[in-house]
Length: 100
Image (cartoon, one colour):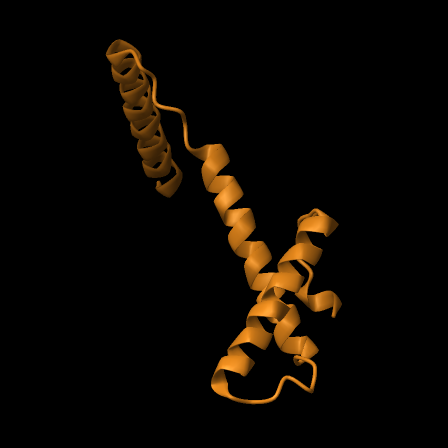
């Protein structure tokens, strides 16, 4: 199942916890559906669910890390907005130059 492993390193403890949660959710779904939980959950399905959970967790971490904390000072916010506009303008100009 090396294909289901992400390219980026993931904390093995987090991955194990997420896999256990995915298995528990799958068992709970089976029980609610009325089927007997005598047979273990399909390991491939559990691996896929764990990989999805890892990807979602990684995406949340990236979003949490990339979201800048809003400054309390409105002047700082205005300066940051101006800087962002200048950077966007430069990037647009570089794309036009690269297309030529």
